[in-house]
Picture 1 (spheres, rainbow, N blue to C red):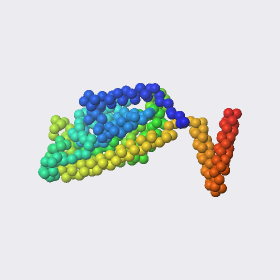
Picture 2 (cartoon, rainbow, N blue to C red):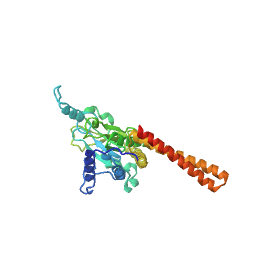
Picture 3 (cartoon, rainbow, N blue to C red):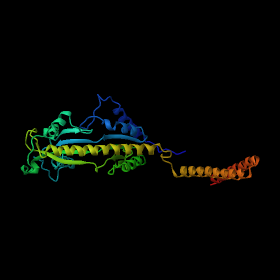
Picture 4 (spheres, rainbow, N blue to C red):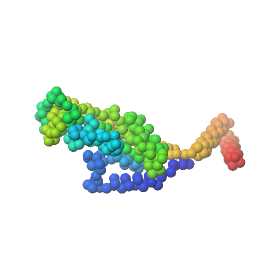
Length: 339
């Protein structure tokens, strides 16, 4: 029988804590994401993964279309060589171009395909439906932007699924990583290897792909404005094209999620996927070899018997084959005991 790799007690404790939090009713559950809850499009696969021994999801996003206004980049904190690394890291993230910065906020987030309202369809592209949906005002020319360090840009983004899965060991995480890469999440990898030095830490597998990602600057706001005077840089036709592209990638993302789930569950449902040491594997292969040998000898005896056409001779030959196989097996067991 194939031996299972043991699950550390600390992993079991952490997994149960996460499962308890996921069991909280939707009305009372919150998390750190902008949405504040688990995406409906990914609840099924999260349940499947969490039902596998040695695995537990820690964070997830099914994929999303978002419009984000950068925070202020002005008045950065002056850092000297004596400043600690944590303060420096936080400050650089605040002022780095494209970062969230101070006062950045989501203007629009959807974890589903984005469609137009029936009214907007009647209005046509001249109605400015998506510009209103994203909170963007009248279109301005990009030549008005003279200093990008004092400009807060509005970014339209599509981001495919990202899933973090804690594994009880590298062995448990291996099948996750293999399924993810084969399903098209090519940038997947193991993020944390603290477990090599800390028994209370466990490998973290990140399932992700940048191939489907889409980013475009669609507006801006001058730093120092009150946060409501957001100007567009593109017209409604361009926004409509971005939505069409994002929805197309959403569908491809959904297909990859399905392939990932199928590959992972198929791997886990196959007999023999659990760990076995070298001695156990040798014993299993030897037993399988003996069974195959017996089957072959009996098949050979059946063939010769069918030619002779004598039933009594058939039974006699089969009994002889079985006694021979049993004798060979007993001899092998004796040798194993002596060694």
